[in-house]
Image 1 (cartoon, rainbow, N blue to C red):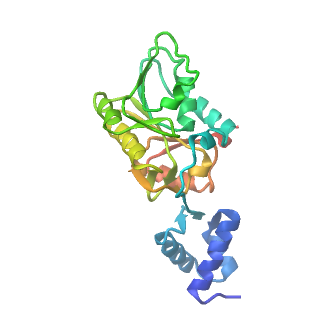
Image 2 (image 1 turned 120 degrees about the vertical axis):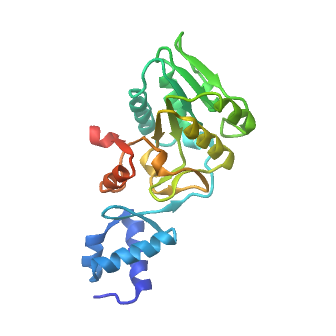
Image 3 (image 1 turned 30 degrees about the vertical axis):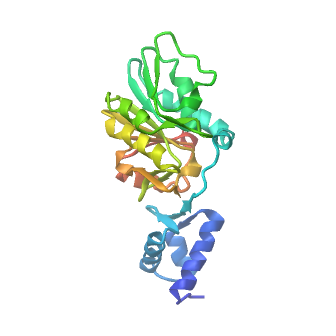
Length: 261
């Protein structure tokens, strides 16, 4: 039956998104018995309301994350995936580089792999990563100063930002709470967002974002940087394979672990 009322049609689209997390324009056009142009108009309207994020072939569910999980909870979530992302990330780093790396549970795992690369200089505000950290003899690990955020294990504030202004790293490795093609990289905390933003701004070479697939389409409260600032995104999977075209159009090189298996 053709659904003439836009509000009813969009409610149905939203219901399908909650069920599947992704919808496709051609399928919606057929199932709702309206034109492709009408569906695209619906998706554009719903995106402006923050209900979804459009992709090359349709849309994915947009999730706004308000409450910040504890570092302990983050550290116990998707651990095998995060370890696989960490190992893949480290394979891109060459001996002798200077690397900035921010706070987070995934980046903590990256640090534990990175410190075995010879002649590497690592600058980080990720104090939680120091637990059981053993560096190679010729790998230098520099912890920024700053104020320790209780429960997150990261250093923030001017004491963390000032040391980052002293170098131009060859690579920055950035963990995020959300990544959106339209709204960019986001963080739960404004102070952590400021540190991540500074790392990206100072980077003379690549910006590598590490994020499991739950972060794609998720929007947190505080802006870090636009998607155009990202050189690589390393993740385990994509909500919608057609998003490869969207990331490519934005200049982002994707490394999807499930595609490499």
